Image 1 (cartoon, rainbow, N blue to C red):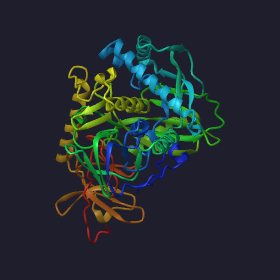
Image 2: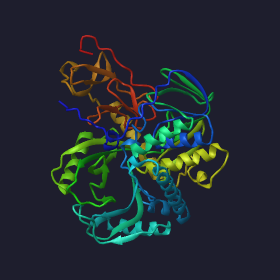
Image 3: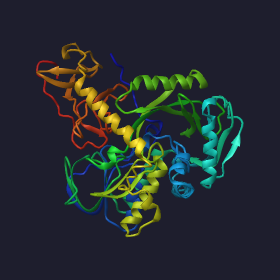
Image 4: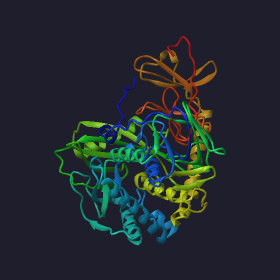
Length: 502
């Protein structure tokens, strides 16, 4: 029997709620923004400040996706290393990437001057590696230098962080903030500037030709549609190019630990990102790690492994918050931002979405105004480069095909519905049909189709967040089948099972 756990991030748990009303009418607007994360809210604010009519629809609550479940770290480099950009594109492109991300951080800093709850502060980024990966650190120092970064070296990191066996990369002048508090304030500012924001308004239909979208309780007709949804809704070419990963986070009260402000990245077999945060008079340590492909890993084991790693270095701490977040990686290391075949998209941010999301919002605002920034050509969604992205594209599609074949040829039935205990899940066969079933702690049985409506892959159970996750393109569903995130527009079909408690 599984035990349900609270999976609200420390940022979402400590920020003020937004409380925008659900869409309950039919609207016409200039620009429709789908998605209430940092990309969508920043864009809505910028457009409203330009005097444009803008409507924003968020499926859940503002910040409930990647932004509110992020690390709250802001840096001009990339989490997977700038050396990939230097190697694939050259020094000039690496310099452009750093310039755009640095400018985005400055934009956030300026906005945070009026948002004290965002707790923005400048700090260094420190990165070090186990001995077998020390060469990676050396290459990264060189890549940062050719990209125009003022990178330094150190020989140690503050205790009780994992010890550094070699040189430590130090990138000064990076930043941290409370991302949910920032986003909530930006959303309120957008509304005050004239934007219409609606929470709990999931888009269920998109007619790209007529530029009309529908929710369960309303619709929006727009001149332009921007999908700021972390990954575009529906079926798009970029889905075949982006590996989808999930990463786990924990926070604990650590007032006794004298760890200075900083972004700490330990590059090792297990990997670990650490930072501190002072929120509401409490001092937290935030640890993030255990990145795995969505739907084909044991979520509970990943979270427990992260907790064990944190306790190994920080002692027996009472963990106050646990959560996870999803990321989509561009095949060539760059995001996809700009006009697609049926509107604007912004995706492929990897784990660097706070800065990339801000870059995307500013870039799309410029493009909607009829301007063509040079960086837009570099990150345009239809730029598919078979040479620079071939390896990642091949790996992603092999993963998708392997999962399809495995799940359609392998019997994953584990037990009978009648034997399903409260808190347990299983893929079972009912009257000749495979069903994804979960029994809630109160005994209620939820049974849905186990086939993702996006492209037909079979879903897998996520025991940490009580969801059915698709391993192919990252769609996630609640036990009753409703969509949580990902490209799927429609839910998993609910199955009626009379006489079995459902």
